[in-house]
Image (cartoon, rainbow over all chains, first blue to last red; front, side):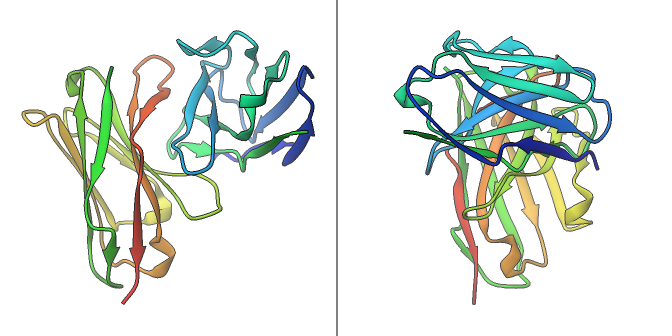
Length: 107
Length: 118
């Protein structure tokens, strides 16, 4: 299975901060990488697909980059509603696998 | 607006079989592929498998041969069966839609909590 490793596991940031979460795949996955945000008690919400394509309806402060094994999710200016746990997920090879999650807290 | 809704029992006994159905509304099931994903309480996400409307499937080897998926295009539904349940199968189970380009998963159901207990 392809292992997805996210860092950091948790972070706390203030409104207006620029936040970066990284995801590393154990082998190349081209750009078959998605990012999700999950809030407590809710299903994950797709933010980014194809490593850098913004899902319709997602604010433009979210962006993704990378290809191969190294990927980044950036929130350009953190908003109060951006709390939650963020997951990366590869769809290059089955079984699809997720990162362990990054819990984002708003200070 | 597409919606997915999981249905099935919330409590299942050990060694028994879990049967869940996902009903899709707002779009045809034929234009996508379909996934099941689960999440134990307080833990991360585990992909269970996917099914195409042709009936072709891919399962996560971690569940070995305990999983079966099926699709009913006439009802816009797809289903999951997991047999030989143990407490480790207790989780929120999600159904979700997959796209053919980049194979990404966009819409998810709200999830259904399944508890395995006698």
